[in-house]
Image (cartoon, rainbow, N blue to C red; front, top):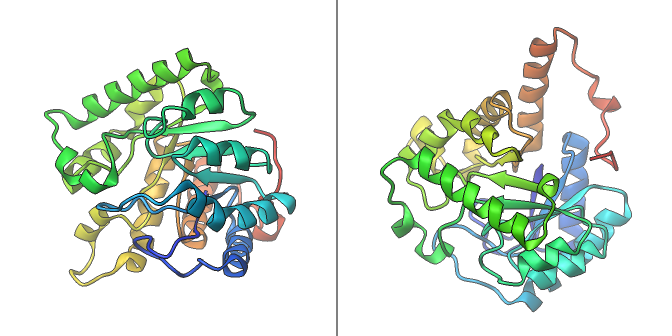
Length: 276
């Protein structure tokens, strides 16, 4: 899953793809590099971030989503707004990726239940503006698992089909570095929830412990690729990354070793419409 932030203020690439033309061009590059899904977001969820209006979010992403879906690219939309979910589903979006798991907007779950989309429910304890203060655990793996299990049950009661729900343990969200590493180490445990698992380690702060003190977010891509491969080995359905090429290379190498088959030539791989 390739990240496409159509925002001026995302933590690692804010402003790089804020223009529609630049965003579309970058999405095409991500697909060429091996992305199977493009996750388009118009609102940053970095620690401490405030909210933007639904109107502004849609102004940023709708032209991009319309163009990408029109080209047959599988599109996910990173949004906490039910109205945005509904509009983008009408444009051909296949996945709604909600970092709040449908908690930020009380209409989200009911809206998604009526749409022909999959739904990513991330582990969430509250808004990004207060994220660091929410990172209090006695047993982080058990608590995150239990909170996701509860949210999964609530979404099903609302009417979302179980097979359409994808869970995300929310690495780096309301978790200190040591919490995030602990969840990553025990990622396989989340398979017991019975849902597909999406994992996002890309360029996150917890990776800084592996790098030099002055390394910026974009210098975390190699660490992202390694941790993404570890997530895949632990059963992740997909990994969400900014730099698709480095992660795809490592995933292909890992898959070749696991299958004892030579890797598929890169030019033969397609990220256009595929069955779920």
